Amino acid sequence: MRRRVVVTGIGCVSPLGNDVQSTWKAVCEGKSGVVPISRFAASGYPSRIAAEVQNFTLSGWFDQSQRTAFEQVGRNIQYGAAAAVEAVADAGLDFRRLLDPTRFGVYIGTGEGAQDFNLLMSLIAKSRDENGNFVLSRFTEMSMSILKAEVEYNQEPNVLAAKIAGLFGAEGPCFNSLTACAASAQAIGEGTELIRNGSADAMIVGGSHSMIHPFGLSGFCLLGTLSTRNDDPTAASRPFDRERDGFVLGEGAAMLILEEYSAALHRGARIYGEIQGYGVASDAYRITDIPLDGNGLARAMEHSLRDAGLNADQIKYVNAHGTSTGANDRAETQALKRVFGKDAYDVPISSTKSMTGHLVAACGALELVLSLLALGEGTVPPTMNYEFPDPDCDLDYVPNAARDAKLDRVMSNNSGFGGQNVSLILSRV
Image 1 (tube, helix red, strand yellow):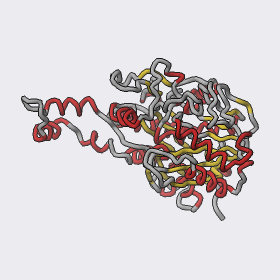
Image 2 (image 1 turned 30 degrees about the vertical axis):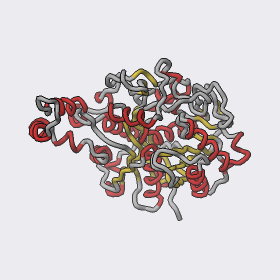
Image 3 (image 1 turned 45 degrees about the vertical axis):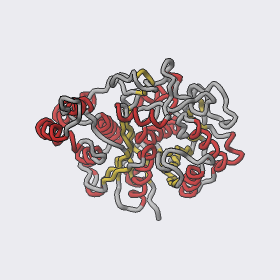
Image 4 (image 1 turned 90 degrees about the vertical axis):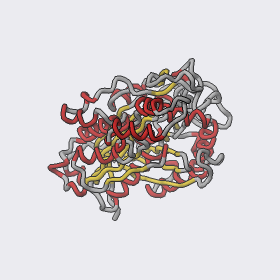
């Protein structure tokens, strides 16, 4: 018999707040975290706005000895570790005392790590000859004398999972999901499977990412996927709206504690909800495009429903991927119509990216945390900036204001570059 998996702790660092409660409050109030980019001089880019984490400090989460270990790492690692600390505290579980450490694991969705562009560019500038040509031997000599080993290994995508495992003594499965914008949702699903099949009893799962740096912004600008509504940042992310012109880059982290249901029940844990369904599917189409009929995402939702043993009409809210790009929002709407049929017009659907921006590898985890809170508090988050109906996007997107609703089962969907699609279903316990 398959073991049941529940969520007993949550944590996050987001553009709307550096913990769960401040983030949730801002979401319910429809606040935006999108601002002009302050991380670096972005004046030469078509898109000059992002949803940046504000006022984050290590001292809020770590003691002095721990802070020293995290001072030289990238923002993605700092955010992820902080979110994990909050989630562990929220779960109220003394892992070292109550768990066999070999059955306590970590599964994280993330991307590239630390980025010290100022140092790199200064080394490149100093490596030019009198004619301005780059000389590799000069760069090699200086880099070997100036760069530190920590700078290199902290760029590896697996470092965050390793650091979280070290923080909490998790000696069990330790994995990473690198499926772009679907990464953290897939990490949650795969972590669930490890507990279901008996490979672990508890998992820290989630994601963290920050691509608000020159390379990240350059790449997305070249793809033409970012909003250029620079003069009105808070109105730039507008999923499903006819005037949408691209997504807004965000950053942050979200982590969840998963436990086997009977063990959580036995220790009297607060349970946010059960991971009842998990589905994945590949578009097998193009790297950066989604098929217009949303076929891959539709199949992921169908797999998740089948995994949960549910019919589509039993889902009372969908947290959509909803990026605010023309193609994605149309295709996702088509996928929802295929899966929900005539009920697609009755189920509330919203995109919280309208407020948080797109956290790339971390978006799925943050959106699942928000979906859990929606489930528990009976509040459907809004899709902000929905002003002009699009005939190709004609469902109930909960425009511009949160809504009270009786929720017992909700769905959260994500898609990633490369054609990865993930659907997760949460239920009350």
